[in-house]
Amino acid sequence: MHGPFIVVLWLAGTITFAGPIDDGPCARQPAPAGDAVAEFTVGVRKYLELREEAARSLPHERSVHDPRVMLELRKTLRRAIREARADARAGDLFTPRAAAAFRHIVAETAAAHRVDPKDIVRELRADRAPGARPPAVNGRYDWRLGAWMWPALLQALPPLPADLQYRIVDDDLVLVDLRAGLVVDILEDAMKTDED
Image (cartoon, rainbow, N blue to C red):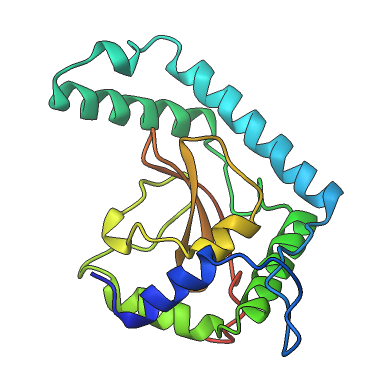
C-alpha cells in the first residue's frame, strides 16, 4: 500500500481542468516533439514485429489453461526475444532525440503538477520489495521493483500497445514487455533528480 504522498500524486494525475489556472502553471499535457516521438514509435513497432516473429512457433496463450505451462511459454518467448536482440542496448528505442523529448515531458509534467521528481523516486524506493534486482535491457523485469506508475506522467507520455508499459525505477524510465516479462529499453536519468 502506498502512503498519502502516492494518493496525492494519483489525484494530481486524474484531475482535469476546464480552463487555465491563474495562480501557476496549467495542468495541460506537454506537447511531445513529433519527430522524436515518431522515432520512438517506429522502434516500438519494430520490437513488436520481432517479438511476433519470435512467438510464431509457440502456442497462443489463450489456448493454454495451466498457469505452469503459461509461465514456461513466457520464459521460452523471453529466451527467443533475447536471442533475436542479443546486442540490445539502452537507447535502442529511447534514441538520443527521443530521450530528450521524454525527459522534457517528465520535467514539464512535474512542473505542471508542482511535484519534485526526487519525492517520486524516494517514495518508490521506499515501496520496493527487498532483494529487487535493477533492470537491464533484454533482462527479466523484477516485479519486486514495483508495478506502480505515476498517472499524470503516464497520461503525458506517448501511448503504448496494451502489453508494453512504462515503469519508473529509481530515476530511470523503463519500457517493459508484460507478455515476455522483459525489459525492452531504459531511459537513464529520466527524472532529473541529480542523484546517483
